[in-house]
Image 1 (cartoon, rainbow, N blue to C red):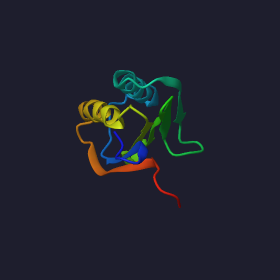
Image 2: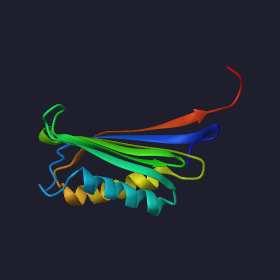
Image 3: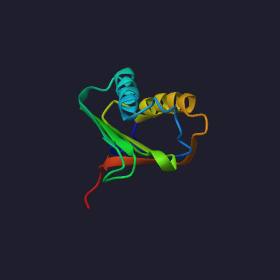
Image 4: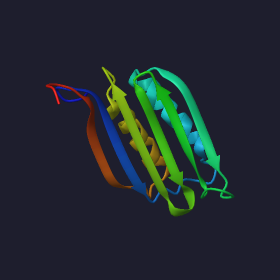
Length: 130
């Protein structure tokens, strides 16, 4: 949950060493995200993944699950082993639940995964006048 005076919470994760099996793709990542959203109690409103074949953008994918409470996204540069995830929720949904599920699943899929950075930021901060 967000701290007092904030209506939302946004978690950012930056990973290196993301080398899943060759059968793992953005489609599988999107399914992990959708499962985490469903298990958190958030309400999914749309989901999409775009796979990049390296012809225009570097190999990898971008995936997003839009939720009533905001979004969960993942962006991967496959050849470099880079994966960035963010989860932003408002109201009663806690993004920690979504992120915890993704961390557990991704560590199992890619044992070389290493979290370089994790940040949590309050969003929609209110209180007082500017």
